[in-house]
Length: 316
Length: 289
Image (cartoon, rainbow over all chains, first blue to last red; front, side):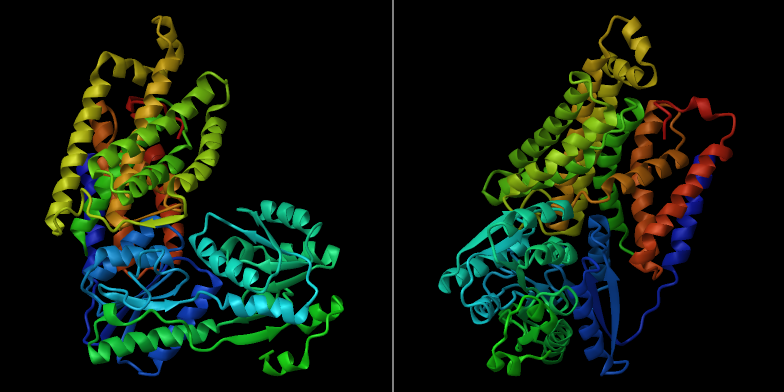
């Protein structure tokens, strides 16, 4: 009897909850985000900003999976079941889950470093299926060029990577290509936790005079520690995103504005909905603008002089 | 609400819970390997399938992969004399590298047709999962009802009793953990197929989530007999998924979900303690959670 009683209490609760559903005739956009990571959060700010311009025409259902695979799958299934008009997916696992769950609802993914490697797009020009989006593969060639411009006599660049992150592995292909093009010697070290990052940084510090920030989330979470190790030996840290320069003392970088990337994402979504386009035929794009940032304090500490021609181009 | 989806996910997770019941409940072995073997199941399946191996064979190999992980944990405990919790942690740590090496990267998207999406219809997926689920549950039920299974269950409740019967409890711990981790690898492999990708983070937080499911199940179906214990796995997993989905449907922010699960767990634990006062001793299995 107890069994039946307990079971019925749960079922009753569930039915009460599910009957609270409301429907409206606005255009419904589902946004699924894999984790609360600074880049993804900024992209969402941009998305929200764009949709808010069309007051009340669109309603956004925004869900974050907090890196939980069950939650990610549940949110994805629910967005599809609710048959929203379009799904925006931020973060690779979320984009993959949605792509797997629906072949009909248009999908716009954003902030995906390597859409082809993650099988979200067949090719960059022709993603195929019901999906397209925006990649945030950073302008690594420009970042590496900065090393040459700021420190022409660079000896060796040390890079800490995390080979368990698909984004990092994909990005490093471009980093290596750029380093080789500019004929800069480099050394890579693998680290998958904050402790390992400190050990690797200490080891690299004995042989290198520049640290380049690789596109790994683990590194981004531990930029403070990396900077500390670099300061001890007077090593220049370069690259990364905007906050790496402004908050964590990276000397300079070229990067995208992620809020702007969010706006671009929303614009792409609106274009698909308004013109009833087939997302599979729209090429995966990069954000149009790159911005140059400098941290003059860091440069002064290291006794570096930044050429005026560069400073004039910088945003900050 | 997507009731079919909830039941489907429930079936996938019920295999996980069943594996957990085997180690946590019946063997009294708090095996932390399971978070790793869940990922291993998906990883082996994804890499084999993307290399053109037959889906059924891929599933079989991923189950074996989970079993090997279980064997390692059990051997560490039984032969190296390492503490139960610690041997699980050691295997779990090593599995992280192993899983990355297996996949060669951190994330694989499964685009090939496999067992679950052979026919692209919702009912087909449900049907296949149902058959797999029922078959596994019947298999485990029969296994645990054999003489060997009986000894295995006794190992968790009273190890010295098994020793008195001139049997070696190590044998049962090893076989038990192999089966438990194989089940969890199967669950991971089905989950990877179901969501369409295998990611190194697929096991994140699984232990706590499934522990919740197990306890919810045991509170709804009181596990006084073996049959009830096994059924509690299904009920628990489906109820857990139902609560998860309905909380989201209600408009609860996912960020608040974890605290809701915590509160729910507290409520259920208190219910166990006071709601069934006096009948406590009837539950089968080790009672350390």
